[in-house]
Image 1 (spheres, helix red, strand yellow):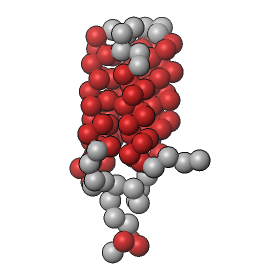
Image 2 (tube, helix red, strand yellow):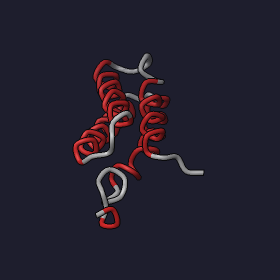
Image 3 (spheres, one colour):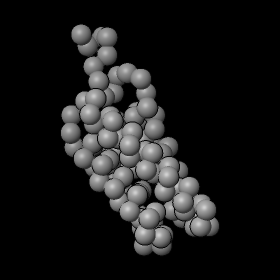
Image 4 (tube, helix red, strand yellow):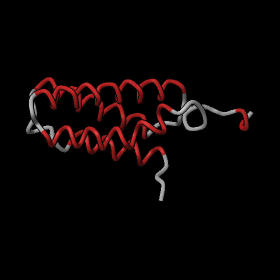
Length: 105
């Protein structure tokens, strides 16, 4: 079973918000901003600008995972890795999800 891009982004946003109580303020800020960006992307049509926002969110999630790992907090790391597992394939793919491909022209 595969999820379409919108539900994947929404699920990743939810995973970003799960551990926000147990982490430091800098990690929490990165995760909340990434969650807001992913929700915004999930509710908009797929364009080049939404892809750029989603890519920035994935970088924020990765930075938050690194910060949480350096502080020894396993729950935020697991949630961030799961969020990245959901978001990275459709967001960092070259064509087809966020912008029209050659077949759509």
